[in-house]
Image (cartoon, rainbow, N blue to C red; front, top):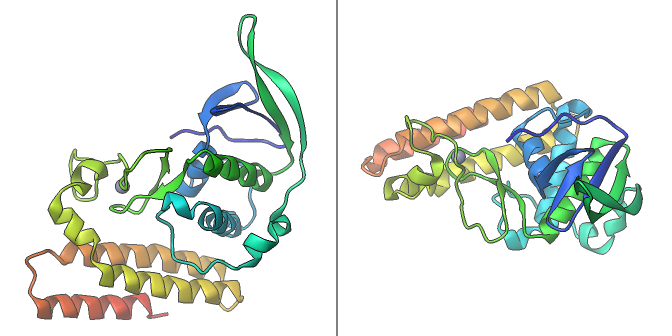
Length: 251
Ligand SMILES: [Zn+2]
């Protein structure tokens, strides 16, 4: 997915089912936040976008849980439900005609955003309202745009270890189902992730160290998943799991 690099202030025309950024578009709701989650450089952010990423994941979990987004486990703080204005943004908005062709136009909500944070907050909220949201591929772990009614749990990129099969094709196969449903591996990874993320949030771990840890941890997790085939014997599996536990927690 290619999303244009944005500059602020930014004018966006939100239509009923799609939107425009200046005269570029139309874009699907959720396209921008998905591009941001994938790691595309779509505009200016502080601290490599990590705090913004976590804020948006939190928003996704709070309001989008009915979409079963495949996001990292994280407790939702009840303030998000009872004091939603704590996350509010202020932007100017007017109704306007967005020109779509010669003598044609549609009514749109025209927002002017002063930061990427404000734009993504609104774009994600509007996406969730329409049943769209970023979803994390259950096979390769990368984000893709889930659209309303779409049941896909896998993305359409080439799957890890495959030459031409996409995650969606490979993920449908039983062998892969078994592999990715290796709960133990994912649980270990998620538990370690929470631990190091908390350490980073408390200021006890630098951002560079946290990012390095997260990259290595994902690689270690994937390597363990690769090794744990359905035919593997129990002792070897236990050994791989134990090694993964040590690797994830070695810092
Ligand atoms: Zn994938």
